[in-house]
Length: 186
Image (cartoon, rainbow, N blue to C red):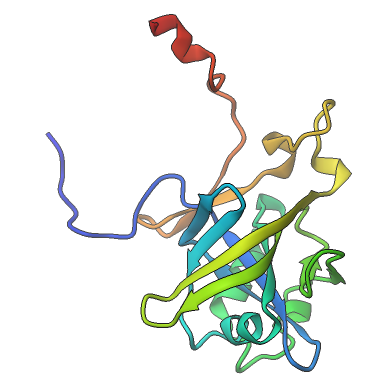
């Protein structure tokens, strides 16, 4: 038997994405967003409301980065979602984050978060809150790469948001092989 919860924003896993953009004054701002994901091969979409300082910055600069929140920085990642950049302009620094300007877009990379998607703004609809970005580059620090040079989720330790229980979960355990295990059923 199933329990019905009605319409809720709950899927598993729900990524914890940290969006970052520069303000007009050059100060980096960041926010925690869970409602997002890849929507085309070189496109990322997410839902962020217009009153966020990060939204204002993205619209002004036409660029942003999306870092994967990690278990090592769960407290700082949660903090940038709790505090508004409209009220705390230096919240990135207060979170303990440091930034480096992206080589590809006019937006900051958060040094402590080892993987980021660097984007140019495609569109933003304030009514639906849908933000769409063109993926210009994906970067990862060498410390989270495997022997083949690809991101190793066990080293990255990305977290997901559990909307039902209001907790963060860490990903990393391999339970199968994509495009291979299903061949047993062919």
